[in-house]
Length: 308
View (cartoon, rainbow, N blue to C red):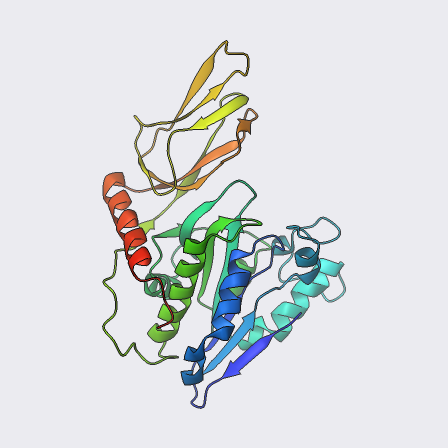
């Protein structure tokens, strides 16, 4: 495992940036590669620990999982006497995680299931929520902790952490990388690890905060036609898509009973009964949320260099 350390001349927080816990999720790998190339780090205060690829065996095999088909993000904090994954997890926690005061973990959706750029924080973690707002993603999702995840370790160790989700596995989505880059440097400035921008900052868009999410699943198998996209508002009256019998005998509309906006979507052309198709973040005013997400995308397009 390659661990890059950048130390500032003055003391300050220790920020851990990590990606590649799942070897096929490349958005974070590319984002952190660009962070390491940035001249902005010459003005760093405190310490920056960057691990672009945590699970190298999975990265080399271009897969999500460890060689034994286990998910590393279900094995934390690990065990020095356990399986290969358990030992990797334990070493990472002892040698790297224990040295940081803050952390940002980069992830992506599965193949064919892209995610809207979003930050996930633990419900009730005010320190993490403050960092999430500084990151300025289109959406912040408050979620519970999953046992065995790295985020649960951060929580138990009292380390404010963000989980960035964007794009999909095996793909480099340019806007997802740009959101990630801007977010990292915005958080570093928020923590005073970097000096403020000399020029006037671009106008900010409001981050939408959602307190819960839910998947809409396929009512039957067949050919899938999606009628909505990432960031789009939905209500109980919105038709999300159609699942059609390939022989043209019938098709079934897909609907939801909640107000919210799409944060994840299944782009595969076929579905089996019960497949997760649309991931919805619940909010009380979906149209308001959609407008802010569109505004956020427009600002990102206007200001394409988040490092200046």
